[in-house]
Image 1 (cartoon, helix red, strand yellow):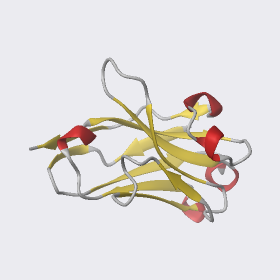
Image 2 (cartoon, rainbow, N blue to C red; image 1 turned 45 degrees about the horizontal axis):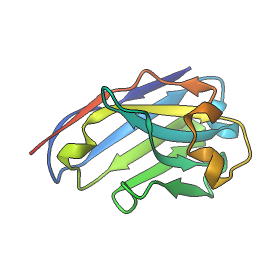
Image 3 (cartoon, helix red, strand yellow; image 1 turned 180 degrees about the vertical axis):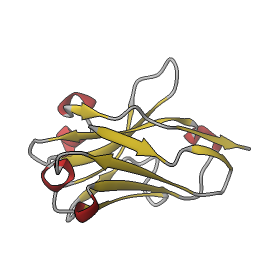
Image 4 (cartoon, rainbow, N blue to C red; image 1 turned 45 degrees about the vertical axis):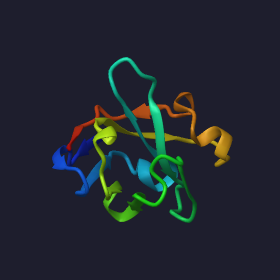
Length: 125
């Protein structure tokens, strides 16, 4: 089970940190990723971190602004979002999967077996 928290309303240029708490020690052995979705559009990959925390990968749309990190002792993954823009407004979800950490795979939502409900993030202009 994945439970996110930390969403809300923020002004453009501001920051938010989302948390994703996992049950059953999932964070210790799973690749963990963040996606977002707006109504009428496909789910968009944002960033991913491998089970050890040693490798990350980001979409071009958020690279340099968003950071994925994990605390295996707390079974929690984080998404630090800085320099937020109105176009970052979406429902954000964390996901967990067990597969080879290849860039062509980690961006695919279908590779992830477990999903959280997702908090709403709204960025005002």
